[in-house]
Image (tube, rainbow, N blue to C red; front, side, top):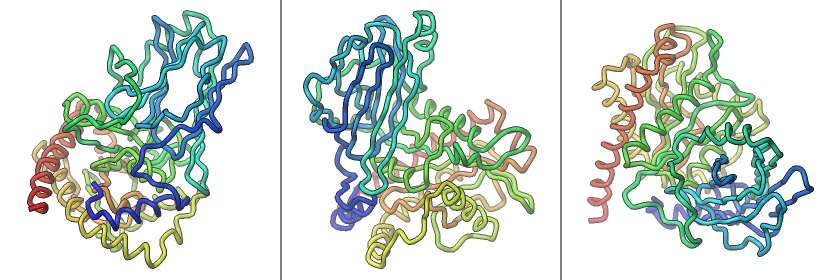
Length: 403
């Protein structure tokens, strides 16, 4: 994706606060800062990473295992003897499902995940993952093992030998970004929040894309937690996303709006309502203590503009495909379904990025649609078809550019 090599080389260095960070490389799990501690009761696993990556954790039965998946990491620097624990019979690392690197902890006794979290160092972009396991009875373990994250294939792909982790040929990597979360619930109407509705929509959409056999998918969040706007972009870039789709269902404090809208980035908003929505999204980060101001200097601005010369038309084509697919599917569209605004979450210069307003919580009919699984399935199928059509056209465009 980094076609303008010189420009994007500099952009990758500037992408995180730590100037030494290189997001094009796989994250590495470091021996220094990683440990497995067993006090005879709880077990604590700490993993130090060179950069933040999306992850998921789940348990499997028969035999009992805890599985920790990361979006492609290099395990080679982990210390020998890392797996010494009475509760953990063995630790294996390597490749798992497409686009994931896997650690499997084989359990000597039933244990459940009591705590799982990732902290990112704001100064250098490194990350620390902590997993705490606590003893449970066999029935409780079996019950938890019955609930897997959506997208995990059964039987689970075994850990493959370590080494390079190439993406499976032909798969289109899509970053799905369920808006808001945690301290920022987004819009709220009738006891429903935008954050919860969009997480449900994104998880369902991920399943639709994976079932097609043409996509690999990552989510910027898989639960009700806060992820800053810059971190959402970082996670998509680390996953080497081919496209970034942010999902929202806002509410307007004044005026009326209904129907789906697709936004791309612009310094000049299409209308006052679009400008207000973009400002509201940024305010959520400010409330959580993330300052979006002053991140770009004059040199970076020029480089970002150069990078967007290539990405902007690809983004526009993606937005047009989504609007067209919604129209063909008979999905109600906003009177102006193709809009532009300065959403910070769309500012990845090297990834075609769009924001889809699935509907407006401030409109009763849109709310009803968002709660209807059949309607959601229709919209999710339209997004899938749009992404496929866009990817095929984008591949043709890229071949013509190379000629």
